[in-house]
Amino acid sequence: MDIILDKLNDIELRYRELEGQLSDPKIVAKPGMYQKYAKEHADIRELVETIRVYNKVRSQIEEYQDVLGGSDDELKSIVKDEMPQLKQKQTDLEDQLKILLLPKDPNDSKNVFLEVRAGTGGDEAGLFVGDLFRMYAKYAEAQGWKVEVISSSSSGVGGFKEIIAQIEGSGAYSRLKYESGVHRVQRVPVTEAQGRIHTSAVTVAIMPEAEEVEVNIDPNDLRIDVYRSTGHGGQSVNTTDSAVRITHLPTGLVVTCQDEKSQLKNKNKAMKVLRARLLDAEVQRQNAEQAQARKSQVGSGDRSERIRTYNFPQGRITDHRINLTRYDLDSFINGNIGAMIDALAAHAQAEALNKT
Image 1 (spheres, rainbow, N blue to C red):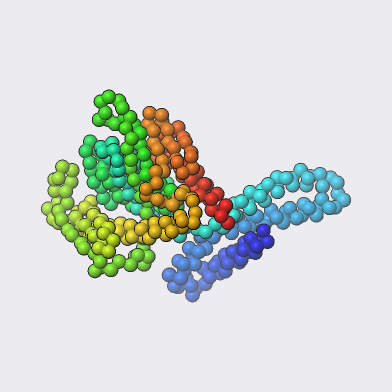
Image 2: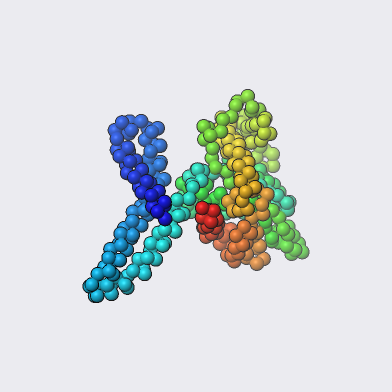
């Protein structure tokens, strides 16, 4: 614990240094440097506040121990009653500090791109794409985040082959990153006349938004095609070639966007998605390397992993990574997924603590 205490003291010292730097006119005059220090200050604020509470509790325990070594019996009786509660508070704060000291995912504060794609199951999979997208959109809106559809591809009976959306908001990636993987649905399709339960699958990808400085794309590596946008049933959205298809030649990644009437806006949106996919591919490569040394799957974002089953006849949702089953499917599919995300985050934290 002495090593941890030294680290806590160093962090609090750094926090005070940052407070001084943020009030320095020379640094305030340099926006780039000021933003860098302001972010570092904000990133450790909760940790420092917890450190300060912890230090007060430790000091109080030391004072109580001095009282217990004294001769005032009445005061000793009071301290004996309060000491167990104070020591429990110290233990709780130590657990909280261990979590706060875990290495942060550098992408946690970023906006995300959400991709929901139909897998096996035909029309039923396409319908579930729409269900899952609405679930995430409702959850995002409840958090005060902004949801913008980048592109969508409709299928039969009102479903979708694919929906790509951007979700902007503080901590979006930190909450949604556990959703990547294969989501399986078991229910009676609307097209099923005999009432048989079908099993279908949908793949969800959560990718952090990539800054231009994080992903360097050589313009010579791109093939950009423009064509006329089409809506439902193939009708023309407008009379100009506003739709954009970008192919990244080295990787073969293809991104299309036709939701805007402006070719430039469609190109900019498509480039954002391409940058996110390239960053995600690098993250997936790193995760694959790390997976050789660890068995943990929670939060790894493995696209081929079956992570959750939605059983409509039983009203059941089961997350297979943490063996958690809930029986509130109607509420869950309407965007109330916070408790499941909390459980996944807690599991990931516990695994990380076991490795420290």
